[in-house]
Image 1: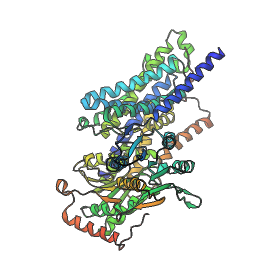
Image 2: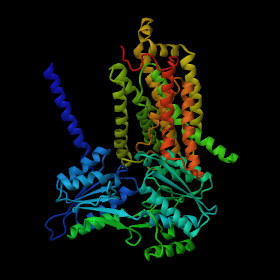
Image 3: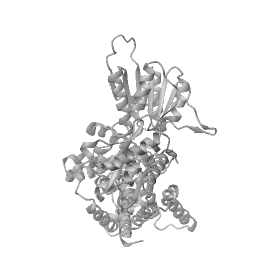
Image 4: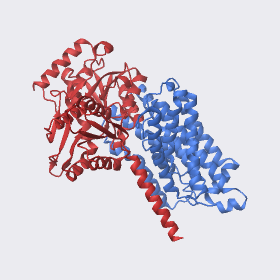
Length: 349
Length: 290
């Protein structure tokens, strides 16, 4: 009887290990033929954030960057979509152990784990989008084999703030944030400064969905936050709230008002409702780090992508939309030049 | 505050309360039969998933699929804890994990993403208003069922003194299975509502509403009317927080979000202090029996 139950235990344990392995099985592998004359193909692994592939935002932008590198630089790439927190760490570790040259993590949630794994695998390279690790002594500088890809979200948000304020008859705007944390406060701060720069009497209403990571996945809460802001007179609501922002678009649809997307161009989520998006060109940064590693000059430390580097921007494709009039475009472009020239400094809080 | 704003706030309270009320009712019917239901969160999520999977074929099928998904999940839970007498807490948590995992797998298969479905155009125009009506009539119906029907008497007997019920030839097993299934149906309405309101499925979109409903059920003392009232109270706290934020009055988020749990803890403490036994937990709650 004892032996039988021990056998059962062993079988169950083995099954669990197998199931775990399956969870981490890379979901999509994309191999490309190495360019002529090249001896070794650079292998890049990417671990997605909680939102996962298909979020039409952050993760998809990172995917595009790697995909472009596959096509243009002849690297090979694999993608891992973690289920939850623990899978994230094991996803990174798995890629490192399998000998990938560069391991990318998309999102600030990777900061802790990647720092640790970068120490454990000193001969692999790591890149963390939105890296933000602070300890008692302040910012933790990444080790020699790791680069932090950071964005000046406040600069892009400044521009969409100006776009929104220039088209707000009631001089009232809204901001819906996901989790109430400094990273998201940067969006709010930039948006507010941009709005006030072109419309000093404008008001910005602010709402946050919550205080945990769930706050990025609560569209029903996002819809209620935005509905309340529209009812309080907001003409345009800007969100920095992941999937919660999808609720903001739904509220805009129902009230017939407009919204501004974030991270990627979110026009397709709600055509005619999303007037523009604060675009974080994660693909630019990801492509940049892959190509520098391939060319043999990987630079560790912190790389910042602002307006000047083309790392942030606002979505504007002229003929098909027409939700941003030419006069507004001109005004916002002159603000862009002022920021790049240093005439305007955008604060991040 | 102008009257238009007040109307807006009242609507927001009603909209927010639907999943809370339905899941609280689902929890109540299940626990009055003596079966703990931590699975509410999972049932909400799976019902939402079912709705999204059915939505490409029309709003009616979306509704049917959502309800069916909820009931099937509840029956699975009933099989585990009523028929096989599994631990109710462990199985409830397992149902939630199943819901999360299954929703990602099926999303990937159906829509090619593990996080969202695309916008479900079939649900446009079928406003969730009638679901609101269903919600509030369910409260009355469930109250009638539990307190003014033979079935309700059996249900309460099975939850309090299953041995006595059995002695009167009431099948404990079948009453509990019916209660669990009904719990699934009621909770599923909350999940269906979430997708009809958002017209999209997002992974983990239940967002802890099932757990909050559990708190409402306890706060309401395992009584449908009071449970629904508690759910309305929690929705009022949430809607007011949102409303005040939009009016520029910033209350720290963590205070608002802790309101329901603090209230529930206080009620439980008060009940303990006053030594009150009336309308507290069913006597045989969590004890499997066959």
